[in-house]
Amino acid sequence: MSAAERAEYERLRNAAGVRHRRLRYATASVLLVLTFLLAPLAVVAAWVDSEVSDTDRYVQTVAPIATEPSVQNTLTDRLTKRVVDNVDVAAFTTAVARTLQREGAPPPVVQGAEALTGPLTSALNSAVHDIVHKVVTSDQFAEVWDDANRQAHAAVVKVLTGEGSSTVQAGDGSIDLNLGTVVDNVKQKLVDAGFDQASKIPDIDKTVTLLETDKLNEAQDAMRLLKVIGTWLPVLVLVLAALAIWSAPAHRVALMSTAIGVGVMMIVLLVGLAVMRQVYLDSVPTTALPQNTAADIFDTFLRFLKNSTRTVLVIAVITALAAYLYGPGRGARWVKRAASSGTGATGRTMARHGLRTGATGRWLGTRSKWTTGIAIAGGALALVLWNYPTPGAVALVLGIVLLVLVLLGILAAASGTAERPAAGDAPVIRPG
Image (cartoon, rainbow, N blue to C red; front, side, top):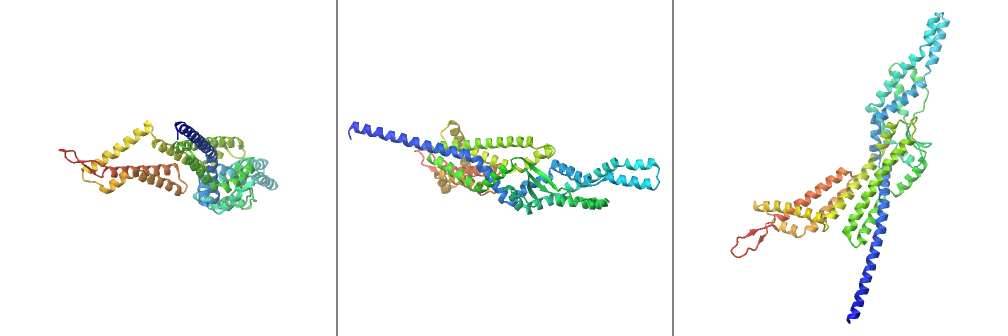
């Protein structure tokens, strides 16, 4: 080709390369935006799916509710009121007064009998409250709570889909817990304590509102949708993120951008949960639930969702730092030099004391990229196989991976490779 033809060829080639890079940037950008938008929804969907499909997970979620002091106090007050309201103390004192009057008792005695309504009501309320409190705070109540929730998990699924039955029920704008077993237990305790008339107490309202919201129907619709996509949406997010990183011209930068973006979205989700908590507490009337009880129930029910969000956030931060350390930045170079110096010094010390790794160390030294990748992949696989990993689990796996990398670096540096000495010099033992 002539000079002009080659110049034209290079111009067209550069133009094609620019268009190709722009297309890759555009594709990666679209995939990243989809990843960021779907990441919080994927975390919520996975949480809902675990609560619906995993009975043990659901029981772990609701078990602490029975031991929350605020919940126990609320249940004690509600059950006490319902039991006492079904005892007509005024009718009893009126009947006693009439009997005394027919028997010719002095008027002061008759009036004194009628005046016993208040003290008897107070004494009955105090006695019933003590007995109910002992029942609600007992280990037996916690066991009954767990067993009832475990056996009624199918009913919980129906609640999440808008169909209530059994122990847990979906009411009109609320989610209620049926405490029939506990109420019957309280009545029996009253009879055992000497209140024989307690056995004649008629059936009372045995439901206690756990969650109340005027948006229950919309929430149930969302939960049904999340149940369907709970399994595959997280997989889709991972696939989109992988495609974005693969299609981007700079894979390391794309990985770091993906991790930072997902981390930011997890922070947004945590803020959103905090806002939703406050909105929920403001919407719950104090006549339905005291503020502290509603807050404890909300926090307990959503604690695993918050833990999952924090776990993804920690993984995103670690991934972003790892992607940065693989780059040419000044900070990354300093960290890598410091790590290499530390493992090298330890390996050379081992070699000087006769603890040489020989061919194994040299093999590790020449394949450090492969061994590093295998160690990181092993850590990632451990998190994937871990059943509901927590931030603590992520920190543990990270620590193990770092320890393995340090050991590999030391073993590679302790190979004791003998370099060919210069004339007149003694042989030098230097790690490979």
